Amino acid sequence: MSLTGTGERFWWVFSVALCWLLSVIYMINRGYGRTLLTPERMSFRTFFSRRSIPWGEITNIEKRRHQTRSGEWWDLRVVRSHGRPLAIPGAFSSRADDGDFEVKFTVIREYWARSARTE
Image (cartoon, rainbow, N blue to C red; front, side, top):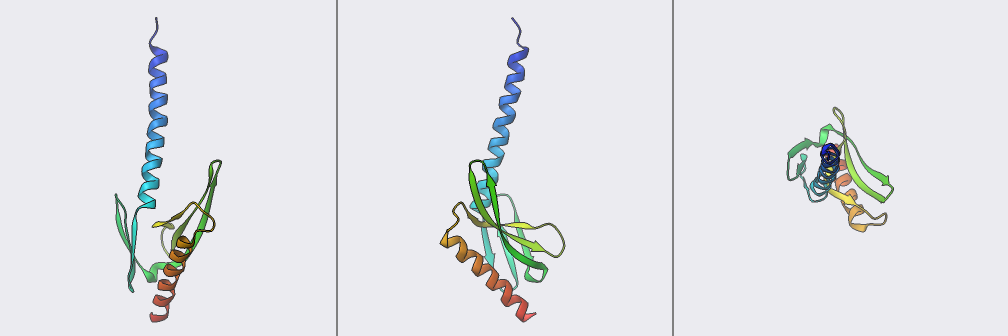
């Protein structure tokens, strides 16, 4: 009787389960995070982080579509003048025609446009 196959199978199952758990935590963190818009900046708050970005550092706010075998989803991203683009917490949809998602996109772009006029 050999136990080597059982140990290898355990690590394989453990690795897959860990990857699945991390992806679920990532989606919950992104989907249920909050974004506060003020005249000076955007403040992001998630379960694991807090970040604040002044409007002057933002060069674009874009809608991105992601597609997998099981479906597609949309999110909003802040493109900064320095650094990588950041996903906006709480701005996430799994439907192409989600009215609430479009309202969030419009409101965020309006805040950004107003800040550009006052600078």
